Image 1 (tube, rainbow, N blue to C red):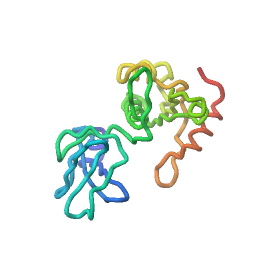
Image 2 (cartoon, rainbow, N blue to C red):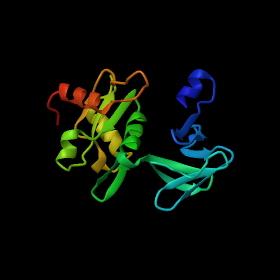
Image 3 (cartoon, rainbow, N blue to C red):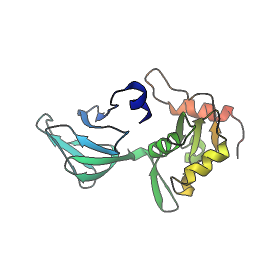
Image 4 (spheres, rainbow, N blue to C red):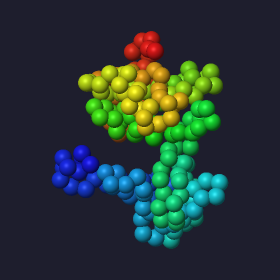
Length: 185
């Protein structure tokens, strides 16, 4: 809601993929639910499929979706983004969003460090831009929003995230920033 108030205009997100283009929209200040664009429908058997007249054939989506009906869904995260801890699942993207929603957090990125992957572990790490909020306060607030098994360790406050020109966060850059922070609890 902050963006809409700041700019005095609706803020809309667009969901899509390279294979199919723009597929759905939502106003994140008002809803977590995505609505497909006109002429498209969604189904899910093993994986989500979107189809419609403008598509030559149904397109398999690489994201984890909760399909509500043929026109609406919740985006849970990338399939490759899912982590499983204690029999529970959460997308790293969703964990990042939950961190970003904590008051005083300006930006955040949760990720699975390469060292953890190689060791077969799924404990996430996080880099957080929060100049006035302690790491412990962030952990406590996050534990109210997600199952505590998903609270990142390490969770490191940084001045800014290593976003590239496209606004993306290259995994190697996140790793380098985490390493440069030194040992953390």
